[in-house]
Image 1 (cartoon, rainbow, N blue to C red):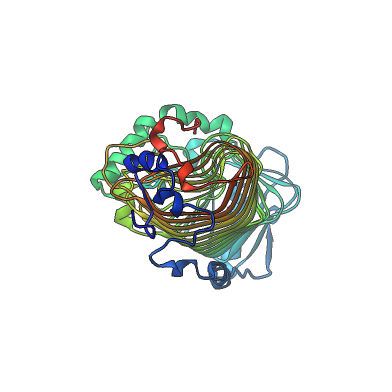
Image 2 (spheres, rainbow, N blue to C red; image 1 turned 120 degrees about the vertical axis):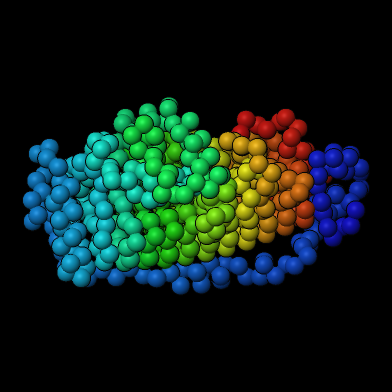
Length: 481
């Protein structure tokens, strides 16, 4: 084997790891240089992250204020504040922009709130905006994307479409009442999911994909759809019906200082989807799924749209839940994900820490991913690349993972440490892992179908880990993840 080109496959890995002094051992040694055909993608990547942040367009809202109480909203009386909120938004927009203020107190919204351009919705300290579960109020349907496939369906609760220069700010709370009223839809949604995915696969016109009534799919919580210059700063988001903050087909998005609390499955914190120039920082995710997950469409429908998620910076975030994971890419990533920078993520306890997930239906390319300064306590898996994510439908379009730098990572205890599982026709390529420390790991290293994997100062229990320690991913010892 050429020592400048390390290839691990299901067949060769077992044989190589039995050869004392063989080339796999040499190529995986801690002291070895990075083994890449073109190492230029590693040149000063974090300056590129700073440049992305500097290029994000900023939100600028006029100083005019529009309190919802001036438009008929009454605090704590059980009435619907939505008409007053929409009237205040319309007035602010007509005036050329302004801040719509939701004061301290409990405010009910019987249906979704829709943005207009140049409007900031501000939740004052002590404000609690609660959405009611009257399903018919979330009509007429809007065009959106549900788990990566376009359709017309119920409106998200806080929704903006084709807007620019908009914001959601303040320290108040937005409450979706998701677990009690919307999560039960999940029990009957599987055949509806299949129908939607069939429509995406078969190229059914989006206008014919109407999912309301008996075709029930849970609505998003906060969605910005085809928007430019978006700011979310400060609010507490609780009990989401589905994904919590979903920038879809957006540009120039800043999400900072939010606190997400939603204990059930599918309540991802932030899901940038076919969006670019996005900053996510100083957020706390106490959720039952991924804290941040990057998306770009599902299978054939994602290829049809063909818009990647790119130029995203995630920094200084915390995953304070225990039932989900921290940072994910996928599984709906068919339009591609590239130029991603994650710097600083604390996870005292999580199922997955860093998760690159896809399956053979997806196609697509994930590339130029840079991650550093990850501190985890107890996790089920630390770093996973998989082409075997669930809901596989029989395709033969292996995704590609390439050019990934992982550095300065620490975990106290994990079941699976590093698991890299490519495909024989699309191996995972050019992954550099350095300065990674595992206190304890039941399965420190699993590798199948990968090329040019570099381990540099990777330790488990104080012992240096090399590629000779790897076992195949399909060995049946998956550690339960």
